[in-house]
Length: 385
Image 1 (cartoon, one colour):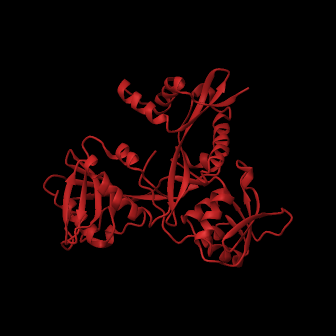
Image 2 (image 1 turned 45 degrees about the horizontal axis):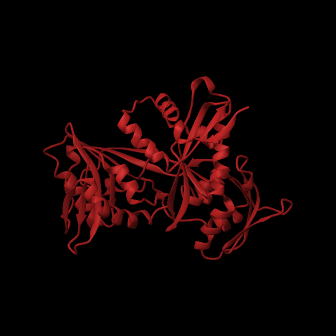
Image 3 (image 1 turned 180 degrees about the vertical axis):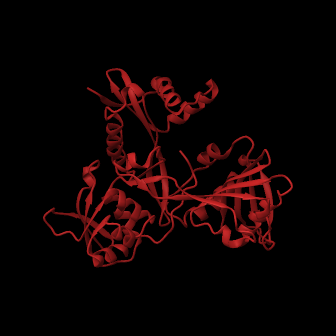
């Protein structure tokens, strides 16, 4: 009979062996030991048949910005099963167990990067954010109007304070952005061959940065953060200054980016790519905080469907700044599954869109009432785990 147990440090080697096999890489001993140090900060669960671990997953204890407030989040990652044990419902057991554990820990929302969107939709996660991928050539690199400030390049360790200060102001404008710690920044961005370019305006305030590398006549911008148009001009013009060094520029941008509208020659390749998925873990705890940030609105009752987190299922009445569970016999105005509710809460889709698609079911008037409780902010996620 399979059992789920927390992975102990003495089991890290076999846990790592499964990751190496499933994701097809090999770590040297020094890198492996650094990884094991990080694992002490994670919740790692294994599904066992006797003493044999057949699958595992990791949960990162992180925080997200939603409506300008920080929410506890469980980041699910490194889900893997030995091939000889697949299709035994092992991952299903692990995901169900992890949801209950995240709820107990107060992690009211969860994120993951899917290997297959349809697989995780079955368990309640839904797409919540897109990225724009740009590929530009030399003919696109025409400077904008000159900015008023200056650019300075730094190795990442020296730029972390500046990045953190700028990023926090940027991230709180969106829903779903990670509330980064200094330690997280250092782990994610201190990499050989990359640098941070920081923009300082004429008042002496740092208002933008980009993370990039230049290699083989190509510049790759993996993060671009600008607090205002002056910083955007400064960062773009800095990229254009590489026109004697590179033939191509690749950039990863937020879904609401408008670079094509701003530059002289806007004909370049753009792709909008679905990125991370999100899932509300605890409807009552999540919405108690979420609606406390909204103005009072007309009451609305909705039925939530969530077979993998049964504590979320049932009828919920939202009124003013409170949410309460009501008896199942009470009339409900709307019906929604947890996937759709998660996308609505973060602002990836609107209530009207969900209603038109048949994913928020009920009268349009009730849909409009519920919409007044929902965010109007864009989603963004600049990280990976």
